[in-house]
Length: 121
Length: 348
Image (tube, rainbow over all chains, first blue to last red):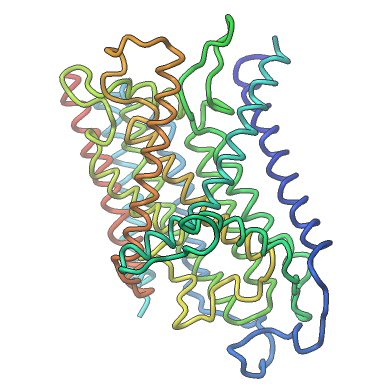
């Protein structure tokens, strides 16, 4: 086992703690909480008014667009990380080549702005 | 040796885990007391001296309340949602360096559960998994208000994650590493080479962008549109009761605690404090004082979170999205280039 893999073991220990805690507490509350169910109680709560239909409804496409744009930009942000870690060795060349990348990044950004992807009114 | 290493880490993980839960529980008390203080009220004062046992009573009540799973909901996802939110919140603390190293016998024990060399990226990865907890919970409730709250919360969180990621890049350019323990070690003491060694003084604008995004990421006011009572009944957890509601609440407070710890260690020197080398104390004492100092910094940030909550009103949704996409992202990009130029200027 070398230095970096052995560092992942404690992380696994912590995840066992976390998962164990969550599962245990959910089971305990399920067992010790009272259970007096009735049809009215199990209805959805919509401000006390009778619920109409169900919530499997279409929603504004803006949210979907936001999610897609996030995936796109987040991948580009990830590309920054290895570059940033080694920035001091790259020096001027690094900054210039990143300028090209960011120019493309900004071009996409401006296009989206023009297309009003960020407009929410 | 391997087993002793694992034993140390298990003990540290257990202590860190318990402290996280304890602080999350008592943050609710702190929030109510601080809210009361800022609004000239008394706050909880019945359970125990100064209402000190109030959070324990609340936690106990979460255990003994009836669980209600709405008949029309998706049962499996309804249970999984808060579970994911809580688990991911508890997993982020792994890479936080709680203190320096302790000398026990002839061994050096570092007070960090896992010193991953990609620590910063790990935190981002786990934090973005937290979005699933909210989205799944809101969708599974089969309630229109929960769904709206969940969609709002998740699109807000992913929008601000971009600004957050970009603002950290300029910090990474200075540190040259993603390991949390190395970043904290680089900020040793308070003053080095004729300048402050804490990264806040080298990256004040980066820190500003980061803290705004951290507020949005934790769904705290002024970005708490997910639970905007005036428009949505209660946000993504409208249908939740009993401990599942408790998990969503605790996850929020744990996230606040962890992001405070994250900011304290990345920008405010973590467990480092001024004159730590001039005190003439042994390594162990320095470490112990360091841990206390680190927690004081975290508490200061938590107080700041609460202070903001009772000072600034909530944004409108279009304002929130505009701030995230059209202000934070370009500002962070510009900041990267400004940082790059300054680093190059200093090299020559």
